[in-house]
Structures are given as C-alpha cells and as structure tokens.
Image (cartoon, rainbow, N blue to C red; front, side, top):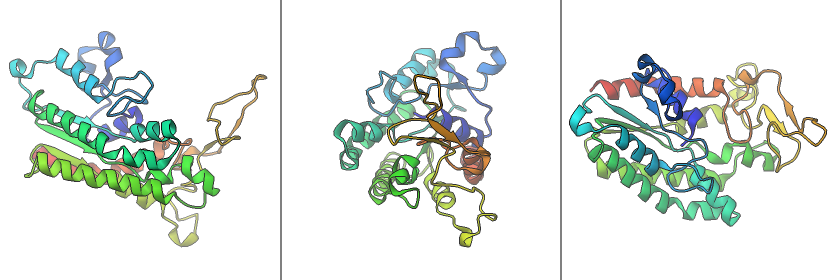
Length: 272
C-alpha cells in the first residue's frame, strides 16, 4: 500500500488527509473524524520482504478498533491502493519482470479475499480500489532506455493485473453497488505519453520519463551521499514540471493532476 498515492486518491474523494494509524493516540477528535490511514510504505497485498503490514494485517487492525455490527458502517468508505510493491518484490527476488508477471494470479487472488473481507466482515458500504499505473513508464525502467520510452513487458504486466482485477470486481459485485475500480492507469498514460506534437511549452509536464531527482548510478537512489557527504544525485529546478520525483514516486504536481481526472467519478459513486 502506497502512502503517497493514498493521500492524493483520498483528496479525490473530497476527504482531508486521514490520520495515520501510528499517530492515532495523539490525534484530536476532529482529526480522527476524517478517518484513518492504515497504509504502510513498501507494503503490498502479500508480504514484500520488508516486515511491513500487508493488506490483511491492515484490515485486522481496523477490525480490532471497530465493531461495525455494534456501531454501524452505513456511511463508511474504504480506499484500497495497490501500487505494485508485490511485483517489485517478485522481480527483485527472482531477478526479472517475467517473475513478477507470473505472480499476478497469486496477488489478485489474495486481493479478492481482502476486498471480500472489507465488504462482508467489516461491513463497508463503499470500497474504492485503484488499478495499476503503466509500470513500464516509471524511471526504474525508462532509465535503461535512456528515458526515451517505456518497457513494454512491464506495461503488459500492469495491463494483465488490471484485467484480472476488473474480473474480480465484476464477480464480487455484478451491480457495482459496493466496489468502484478507480482507474489511475488511463490518466497516468495520458500524461506520460503526451508529446503535444513535440512542443514542450504546451505540455503539462516538461519531463515525464526522466525523474526530477536522478541518481548518478543505476543502482543508486535519490538522496544518496558518499562517505564525504557529497550528493550522488542531481535535482531539477522545478519539480512541478516533472511527472516523477525519483525512480518510482510521482511528484505532488503529478498526483494532483491525476486526482483531478477521477474526482467526478468518485463523487458520483459515493452519492448513490
């Protein structure tokens, strides 16, 4: 579960940022009324090797705090954000995108079970679920192509995950009463592949495939320093003109632009 993506997806729901679960004991009643964020950076649907709480453990925490049968959940909404951490873990573990693609049925099967829990065990009335962005267009992949294009195999994997997720939601909720598939893939692709006839002045983002913060080394990272404290990365002048901040995370400007594209669909779903 990606915390940054959760924040901007929540904004599209018309919600102020929910309080983090870890900060709940120090939050005011007004802040707690916004809801709670159980997301953990680096976590996934299944275990990702980082000792982070996966989605099942996050739902366990929610259930431990709330008894919907006693308190009622008629107006409660859950936002489930899947950003690809499971597939990054599989690719790193087995050294290849093909291993990540082979992992898709396992991930989607577990995701289906946890979505069912949210509806049937926690009593959620509305559950919004994100699909995957074009993962082959993240700088992790585009750097290998000198930032000139996207990795087709990784993008095919994202498309396969999204198709499987659509099938799962159709089976769980044929009448679309409980679940909304929040399509982040389409606006991501629109921004990332927008060349505006090659006129950079007309583009919303000056750079889409190259990140604002770029490591000197392919296996380095944004923020890295050597033993002398010297930066091992470069920074752009204006992060607001870049779609990606680093190898995997979009900038705040990118998330804000993406969130605007699905705000109306979310509000319509929640008003039913």
